[in-house]
Length: 76
Image (cartoon, rainbow, N blue to C red):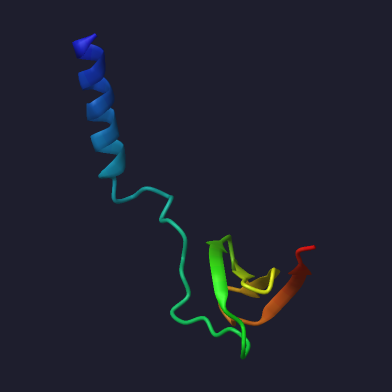
């Protein structure tokens, strides 16, 4: 059991220290400007987009590179 635990820890260390790993994490934009009067409550990132939940119960889907609004969803 101890040997198995050591193998798992070793594999985790090798995998997490791999500099050539394909996963680099989310690519965050340098800046993101929201429309006037909009306050962000929550933010999540996807591949090429950023979703902002506002305090007015609206979800704004923004383009990650340009910051333009792709879609606007009202939460009812």
